[in-house]
Length: 437
Image 1 (cartoon, one colour):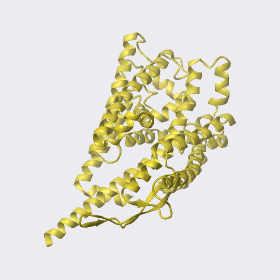
Image 2 (cartoon, rainbow, N blue to C red):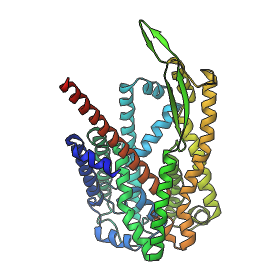
Image 3 (spheres, helix red, strand yellow):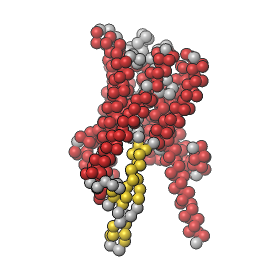
Image 4 (tube, rainbow, N blue to C red):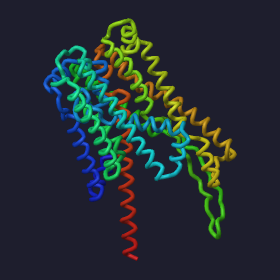
């Protein structure tokens, strides 16, 4: 991987793209530490330093610490990620969106526009909720200092408008990276959020036990290697294309394969599950932690080591994994495309039998994929049980969400860099050959 980066940095075009991506990442982090107007920075810093666990650590992870600081980019990339997932789900259920998806680039541009509108709407909802919690003093349960200098309606509107505008800028920055930089812009930004809080996670574990940090880092190396292996694992279904004559030319007659990844759903089921289990903790905070409902939620769905919480966590991951794979991979469509170009799986008839075979293989692959995601997500809970420190459950450095984002985005970005390096190498080789001829 290091050699690929060195080779890419020697190419002027790729070097500009890589430096542009790094510059946008730095600008993104600057917006995450820049406080919004009207925020009491001193009070936020004191409350943040004295509060750990639960809702605070979840917000710390999913916003790179920006939401707790009530910064300009407090909402980060999550509204756009949520909007993209919702639009993707609606594309399957709404025929109009399905037709737009099949129209090619023009239809995809309209779907992207709808995603932007939904992102702004979700940003308004999220910003209003965060500012309301800050106004009521419920973001940090053990801190009573006022987080806003002015709690009047006008000041609240200004902060909400600033956060919504920040979300729009973040969305624009992600699209800039995709267009002019290296890798998928939104993935790069969420990768930046996770990396930003990683050192603080390690320092928190070090405060509990220095020996635990050493053991954790050694285990982390093997864990990263295992995640890389699982992320690269795939089932290759052989596909044979028959020969066909068009005019005076003959096409086809080639053999290839259809790759089906073991973790076909990626990190989306973990994000879905974390978001859903985030709601009981948010409800407990809004109810002030008192009352029978709040006590029941705090006992069974907030405490991460309770069997009910663990069972719900694993079941939701399994359900979301199967659901997301079913809406992102359409066996009927793949089988129809293969049939259209005279392709077939050896031993399987084209059309409906091919679709049934692909669905069968995909269901067999999804089961170990769901088990892999569930096991990976249980690592922070195991660390919590071993270390017996409440802060390790949500801020464990090698948690499921953290490690999946780091490894997944890193692998995807390196693959894109390597592909562009190879592409320019072939171009140079062809130019050299034409010159000699």
